[in-house]
Amino acid sequence: MSNSDSQPGLVCGLEVGTAKVCAVIAQVDEHGEMNLLGFGRAPSNGIRKGMVVSVKETIASIESAVLEAENQADVKMDGVYVAISGEQIRSMNNSGVITVSRGESHLPANQEIAEDDISRVLDQAKAITLPTEREILHVLPQEFKIDQHDGIKDPLGHVGHRLEARVHLVTIVTSAAQNITRCVEAAGLWVEALVLAPLASAYAVLDETEKDQGVVLIDMGGGTTDIIVYYDGGVRHTAVIPYGGNRVTNDIAQILHTTFQRAEALKRDHGSAKFPANQDDEEITIEGIAGRPPQTTTRKGLSSIIEPRLEEILMLCRNEVRKSEVNDKLTFGVVLTGGGIMVQEVEEKAGEVFNSDTKIGKPAHIAGLENLMDSPEYATVTGLLLYGREYRERYGSPRHTTGLGQFFANLSGAIKDFFKELF
Ligand SMILES: Nc1ncnc2c1ncn2[C@@H]1O[C@H](COP(=O)(O)OP(=O)(O)OP(=O)(O)O)[C@@H](O)[C@H]1O
Ligand SMILES: [Mg+2]
Image (cartoon, rainbow, N blue to C red; front, side, top):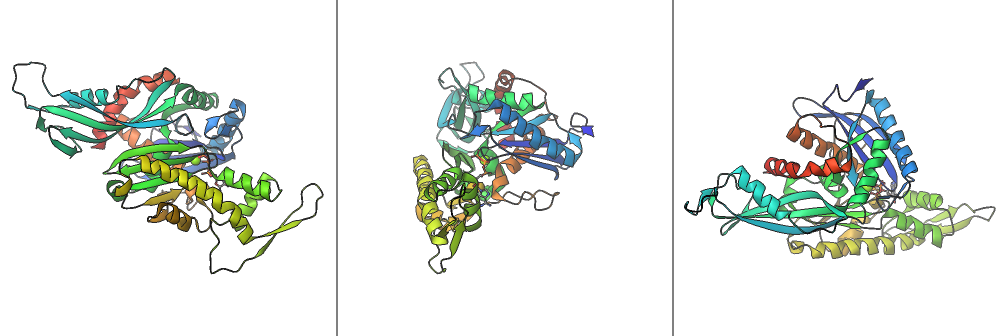
């Protein structure tokens, strides 16, 4: 078994979700082509609503998923890209302005914009007053404005006096990021980058046209539903709703007096987000619990439990999207992904709630391990591989650092480099 240190082309994505912990390993060749080598999945018992609630269980799930992927790939990983979500995420749009000058006040006003100016304006754009417990996770550039001209993607080499950067900032409670980082490290790995889960999913599911002309991606997991809105090629809004598919399963369990596991099976086998008008109903038998007699329900009865809860979560998503300044510009409507949307008629239901074009987004195909990851529940982990490949292109071989302090310390430089790559 070779070590990933001796094979720098190896990338590992790790999603520590509420329902599952999933690890994937891919090899990136010299042309940037990616090949999947290993896949591992373990039940997740230590995460609730995207946050670590049991360190011990989380470490065990990470170890199990990563070991399975390593054995299949016949490699040993050390650096991993880790998705993060949860209620501790906050985001906002911000802008920074600088006067373009070479530091000599007598020079004429208009100067050619240099890399240093771009770094300075991005520093301005992320210079917000944060509560002491928060850190910036991502600075995602949207556009630049030079004097009166806006919509500029790459200001380098333009001539101007006043340079403005508009960015989307994502912040996280430091301890939440530390908890997940420590679990990964206790499992014998280190975090190459923490990535906002819906940002990773967007890498796997959305294409550039959608991002340009406007789209919202909804990733409904077990414990959270993550939202990311794109317009004009940039991220305009992100949000995390602390409910996901587990809410739907809980409702089924409660109303039909059964266990979570049986409710989950009912949802998977017979669930639909609304009962199709042209379909005949069908009786479903539910095994009795602890010696109780079996009961019956119908597909229609089941969908009458699922529909209101899914609708509620989708309406919370819609309210978030309305907060974005681009709500009425989203040409490509809604893309749904994540395991939580894997019930029939979900596109129709989301179409009703959003009154827009809706489709299910499966992760982009990566060669190797045929069809194994061809499901919306693997959008985030697939996106981590694509994000990781881009990150490696930017930085070269991975830099081994431990501890979150180091991770955040690297961020400032990383933001600048990231920007340069983007445009
Ligand atoms: N085949 C299926 N049919 C219906 N629902 C499914 C299916 N597979 C998974 N789900 C639902 O998807 C949800 C889990 O989705 P996913 O695997 O994306 O969550 P996660 O990434 O672990 O969680 P989170 O992102 O919230 O931390 C559960 O609510 C589960 O019931
Ligand atoms: Mg998820």
